[in-house]
Image (tube, rainbow, N blue to C red; front, side, top):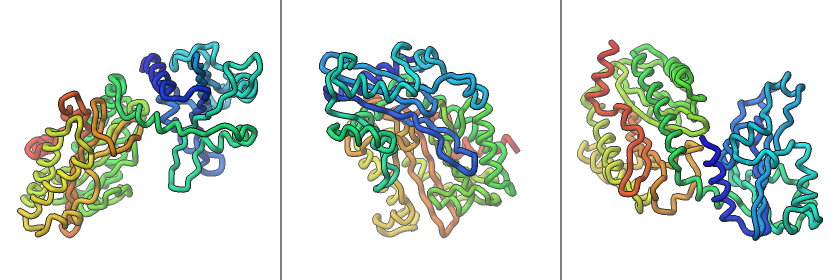
Length: 423
């Protein structure tokens, strides 16, 4: 994306900062895996949102006074040694071109500590502003008692300057990230387009006797060949009864004639995610019972896409889904009480989508234009070995919503026609 987008993101964040404050954001590091191996590096999403950079061990510093604000970037030095062992490092000029931070405000990491003490946490003539009172950090926790990574990164700083008042930068960033701009929407649409290619490749390959892991591998291969960076999350390829397990990820069982296979998967475009679910028959033809349940789920999927609009709550969409699914199962005599829908539908119908698959933001506010979210009703009948989920990605518009994944087939006749052509 153009650097002006990241300049705008930083300005929007600064507008919500208090005066006499500075913020630190860390791009993150690849965690240790085993022996001398590391897991693949994944950029901190807030850091990317503010800079557009996807390199580990970078630091963004933003300082704000009443008069002005300053942004500085600290990067690894592009030394010959690092280049030979780890690959070419990003130069200051390249980092400036991506982030929009002027090259004169990009320093190397070995300058970071001195810069903090001399020009931020000081009243000297070299200081950019008066002594700050507030420090903004990304305080995301990966569990109720998890310690934010940013606190580990700033232990020494906070010990030496205990008078700093810590503020949670996520309170502002989550509000900003919930609404996607034009360029962000385009990235999500690209991710969905890659996902479509992968789904169609899977549908072309599926037949009785195939194994779920073959389809898993094919999806990864297809989206990467198309230009995607890879999967946005662990793919779910679930045949038969496996599809009644919401987060089934083993993907190692054979597919049987007469069963359905449920796909819940998504590709990346840059760090932006797609998230699509489709369900279809392994042998190419829905049974009467499968079609009955499938068309119930499909009708709810389509109704919610039709009515989603600004001002609605996600909880409202979910309640409509539960009501419609319960009504259908009562007609089919699968349940006799709407409350029993919980036995066959046990997840929310929507979540936000963007830089994270389950993107950030509170669900206690109404939908507004620019919000991207999923619509994914499902029915899971374990005793019949049938699990069905149909998931699309939509964006809220001024008057309603637009289905960004409408090009991925989901009508029964379209699915059966597609599957018949490849046989």
